[in-house]
Amino acid sequence: MTRSDESVLSAFCVDHVAQITGLSKARLARWDRLGFFPPEYIGDDNRHNPYARVYSFVDLVGLRTLKILSDVHRVPLRELRKAAEELKNRSDRPWSAIPLAVLKHKVVFDLDSNPRNVTDGQYALKHIPLQPIAQEVRERANKLRYRDGSKVGRTEKRKFVQHNTEVISGTRIPVSAIASFIQADYSNQAILNEYPSLELQDVEAVRQKTKSAA
Image 1 (cartoon, helix red, strand yellow):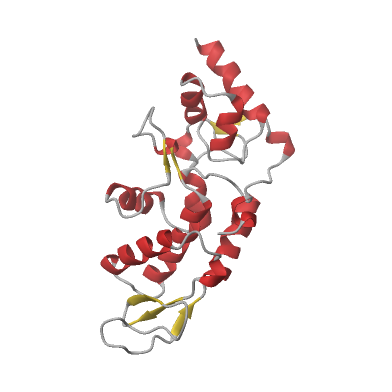
Image 2 (cartoon, one colour):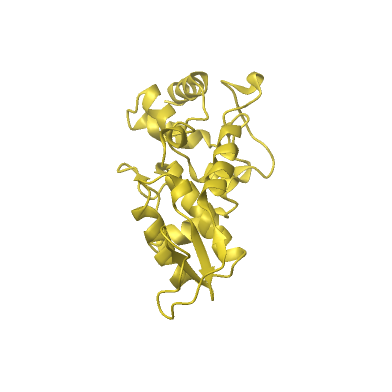
């Protein structure tokens, strides 16, 4: 992955991952629970809180790729496991240098020649270059940066959003998730590192709520 990839956002909560990758939160949780694709960062304070489980940009590109392999190319889970491991192994390379292909519902990696199935030597013709996928993820992630300025530093409840629990205005991030970090003595900057789409005013607003409720 390149530095420009890393600079999009450093970390993503499960709500953002679902928005960007198109995977449902239930599917993400199932893949996490199975050990198939856990997030890169897991908070030690509350491992069962989904908002303490944070995905990296590398994770997002891998998850988006796996969704395409599963839903478009009908690659079964056992083959997705192999692909997920290979994607992680190659994460230090530029995404444009990791072409992959599908042959008979199997994922094939071959960086130096026409991809072949390792079992029977047949050419894999359906190339899936990762550069466009990474670019798509980058563009979707960048959209998370933009919020209506009038919503910054406010909280709200919206029907059908997080089961009508209180969230940071203009986001789907529960106030309780930020409060849990505050109660764990995270600094404002540390919380913003976990939720890059938020502003300092958002964290301060939750701090005030937490003090008032104490």
